[in-house]
Image (cartoon, rainbow, N blue to C red; front, top):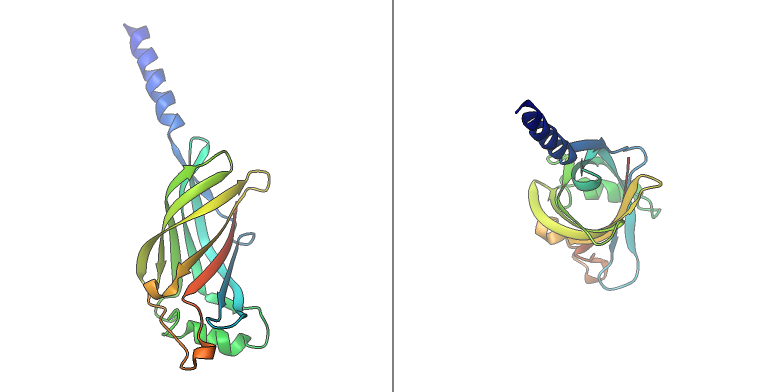
Length: 184
């Protein structure tokens, strides 16, 4: 009887430990978040960076199954030249990201579907300006460099980023593109 109870206990413990979740802290200094937005009616636009404040992946067994990442909106920068100070001030204003009221944005991975060992479809909730909406995108894992990369676009209007220039030729697209590298 004791052997049987011990065997059951070993099976239960090994099953529980194989499904145990582990939080893997993101290295914010190695991670990158690049943004870009094009003009609506002609080529060109603006691009820049924003820094991650903190974040982590959730690892279940040997797979990434979730995560949560905080973006410091005060670090938004424009790197296409010429417009930096004025444009950054404008991006932080209430008709864009309203950084004074909403100093952070957040991405929470809710589901990861593996296509193969390195390619995955990710479902997440993105919070900008206090508005949380679902998004989905493809990502690729690089196990050698301990990073996950992705590119995706959002419709800024869905998050209340509704600025439009009065001159049609100066209008920017409703799409904001992101290129992300999350490193451990």
